Length: 438
Image 1: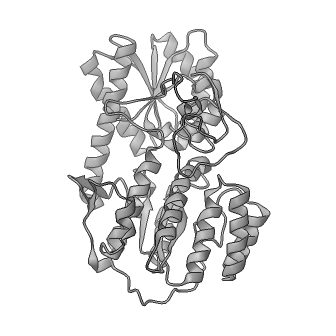
Image 2: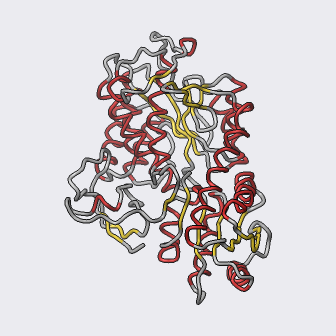
Image 3: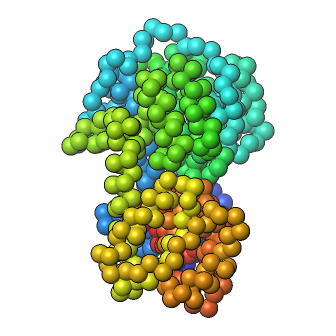
């Protein structure tokens, strides 16, 4: 894929809510890594628009899938918590959606707004900064910690105006307003702010947009407050979950993924009776969104999902090379990666494919250059990177080693590799990589 430049100003005549102008950014992927605009938004209306070539799937997909899922989930969570009594929901939901309410989770409208607790380092409603810090943001955090809501509002408002693409400032600005108004509706959003800050910021932009719309349309006087949870470290997930459980004003959580840390946190929330909407705890039946027990469904959901990913990858490989010779790079320290590897192997007979090599990148001493050369010498023509999102740096190393070879392999991978880090760090080396969205 050739590079393209985005300045945050759509040229195709369409409206993209929550997007603001920014300095020109050179991109090699389908979407801008700063604002999330698709490449075609930079094409003048009426001109030919190049297709997105880094994503493939039998049912289609979106580069911003995580954000698109998250916004309806936030709406659903508020309805679940308030028992269906928020009129604003009907303003923002699709006509064919319906949410099963849970009246038992309704907070009392007369409950006074508690003071801001001193949480650990992984939760913040405005008192700590997770993304890029500026003097104004720090001023806002200091004021928020002291419960000086007017100063926090002023500082975060100025920070948001100076950098419209920073969702953290905007969320904390609205949080301070919610605190000042009293008795806020408080939810939390779990994102990997320290591990993958660009991806976290992309998700939070959608959250900030919905929070703004909700608070501007609220007729009850109760504003939405959003706590940010840093879900970067799987090993600390249970402790972070306990911090949230010990913060009773957080009524529910949106986010998390399918990794081991997310699963541990979700089980802990379930035992404590905390409402969580995530891909592993929700299910659509017709037009109704329902929560499901994670112990009952997590294996089924993960296997079903990765079966679709494996099938998508092998079918695409067969389109590029009949009876494809495939090598699989995976990391054995990840359940996601091991399961995806197995589903790819299971799908190979359907396309008369051949497994040439299996390379475990989690072993010490892994060398990308040697591994790529070994695959080529063994007759491999396609390499599938069945790796978890924590191994983006290794994926980039493989892509760069492949680029430097005379006859580069076709690189493919699962959806966990699609994030701003691989687009930024991979450069031209990942320009032709194909990532599957089942």
